[in-house]
Image 1 (cartoon, one colour):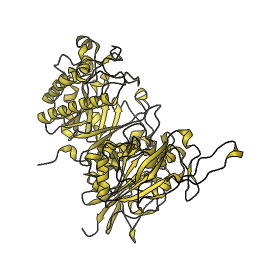
Image 2 (cartoon, rainbow, N blue to C red):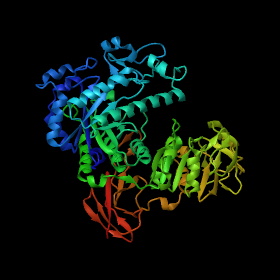
Image 3 (cartoon, rainbow, N blue to C red):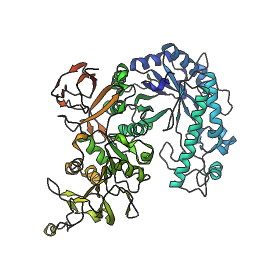
Image 4 (cartoon, helix red, strand yellow):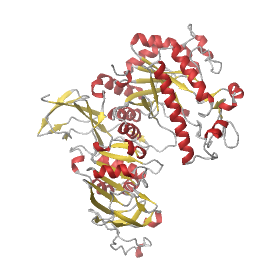
Length: 633
């Protein structure tokens, strides 16, 4: 039995159409897509506006369809794409309805705690608990499938509409359906219990949508959340949002580490922000979306507003170059999976400073790693990793899974509060008898230091005073806090018995704890002392030996019997932006796999010399991809 088409490498282009675009020239758009390197077209089909002559009285037919001789944009697009072998996917948005239908069916609509409907630009938001989602959505999908040979569906804004397009927070929906379905009294603001209710409602709805589509057309994919055929991630910028330069890589890795076999699609936004959709994204910012997607084995996609003629963004030139690279080397990206042996666990809440600091430390010290959401620890095969890093996570949802991993031979390296719950250590693999005190405020850790190889290392964030377990190796004893002003009084730091490092064997593995926030220290001060102290605890065999500088991200992976190494030049990472990276002189790299390899640099287009087990690298521009084949295979 052949694999579904979406399990093979493909490249998507989305035209997010306005109602006035109903008369677009489908052949001209397809010319642009193919020149760009794409072979799948995500087109606006239905929901808020139907770009085909719908027969459902609760849907709104686009009035501009009259400009087309056929009166059916979707039908014309599918027919033209079929002739070229291009896939067509339907973008649907069921999050809003028009005023007339909201008046007829108020039971479908979002209702705030004060009783107000959520109205935005004349459209009324609906609630996933109501029958518009629970019943009518399936009628629309059925009509689309009955009329058109669609290859897949993407459902936009599948949420409870707590926040609108202007980022106004509306709180929890209090419609009649939510009141009936929620177990207990609805809160005004999101609570853990309500978030669980919302998640369960959407997951159930997503599962039913997937079943409906696969039942009617097995060859059509659903692009949505983690349980869909294709996991969706939108790579975008936003005015007022601090830039995390590694957001795309992180999100792809978080999905692929959990289910490596499921495709992840990165829809890269070609403009700055929705209110500023006429302004194209900075080219090297946009390039990072696509490159981070490629390096982690995701499907690259580009998203513009309107048609390509209406959105002549400068970033699309570089975007097309990267997309065509993926097209021309599809064999490399077929079933590409990470070869990292280190796992960095991502916290569930908003406290990310420790996670981001350790992320940067691993990347800069050339330790390849995957990211995994904390909630997925119990349902993920941890045995493929030699090291699991827990960044100040507090109580874990699955401590038993971590203990079992260490007992079987893995190393657990935890920082900060990881494993603690109500003052007690719940991870048996960490060598702590009990926690005696916690210093977690800015004032409580101010002036607290630990001894380091190159001088004292400041504690930023939190420090937990712990009693070591019997047999634990303890070190990095804290220097006591002293006055820090005026200068005449700045003395008195003395060694204490409070360890900043604990380590002990556990089963066939090992548990290591830094009971303080070393990653936050690096994230907030940039002191390499924090990074190097943390990285110095990691087995050197987990890092890639290379002469490349820390500004190069190294991502090893496997595609069948072929080994693949992406080299991403991150010298252009700057405050709140990406710039053109500086060229990096030719260097060397030792493959992280034993054997004799023939190595080809795909972007440079030539075979590289391998001397003494070291690959001689060419000058590195924006990126390079090394394809390693066994010489004697």
